[in-house]
Length: 198
Length: 198
Image 1 (cartoon, rainbow over the protein chains, first blue to last red):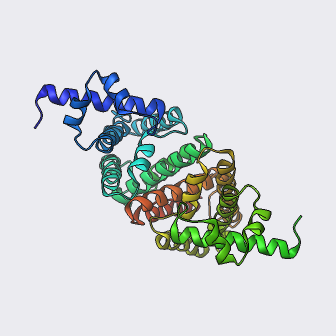
Image 2 (cartoon, rainbow over the protein chains, first blue to last red; image 1 turned 60 degrees about the vertical axis):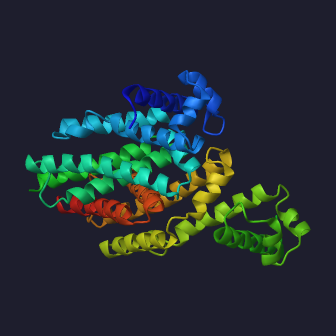
Image 3 (cartoon, chains in turn red, brown; image 1 turned 90 degrees about the horizontal axis):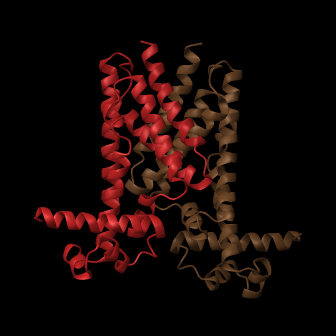
């Protein structure tokens, strides 16, 4: 267990590393720059990250995964009306449009090795956490009788996460958010239509 | 222009390189192995690919992009009944399930540099070609009055390509086709529901 002060220092190192990586990329980020930016010494850095850069990168990836969810709040956590769903949809599109062709999370996962247990655990958790909140929203809308009872909340949430993921992947390749918008709108139209036919 | 024999040799080199890359990965594939496998000499290889390995990798990426489409035929080219759509959906799921966590096309695009003009042109063409055929299928179903007139064929096709892309990306990370299946099924349900409400 870290003391409160220790936890704060560790967090400062992670945030400094995240900022360096966003500015320069993973390869060009040196531990010296992270130390300078976080006003810590190298021995402090190795105290919190004894395994060095790779362990630090994993912590940064965790931070970036957390940001993916946070950036969608408070909307993602309260998908209880069509207005809320629409606002969430707009926030997601805007977030990824702003992010453009460079995805900090994707870069880190590639660097850690897409197929390593650590990277897989992290992406798995992100997908699960994201999906659970979308699912809760669908269930809330079923409770309101605005989404039809025939809709499978877990499976539909999984489909929506896939649709967003694919839209973002295409955005990262083309620079255009068209696919992401079309995919999210199709999912929302699907949910709306299910409620109208009941 | 190549002679017929020249074109055949060039094709043999590309296919040998594709096979080597599928077996060993891009980094471990040496031009010597490609020559041996295709029964060509190094001077022949450089005659067809004067810029060397990178030019050859681009040609292999083109081959793999073509395979993505071919593997979905004849279904993708004739999406004119719900049976055909369902068969196509099953073929797509099966193709990516078999492929598993390693995507030859993705590996090549990463190697060429995701943001290089050559890689972007190639992925752009693949997305466009794929999407055009899905769009033609939606238009055919509208002609049959099986998909509602309110469905935008181009935008819906874009959403479906995004959904597949996202499902495949998650499959490559988790090894499970659940997201891909859920995403495709949601899109098909959306199309079916549009026809029932008219």
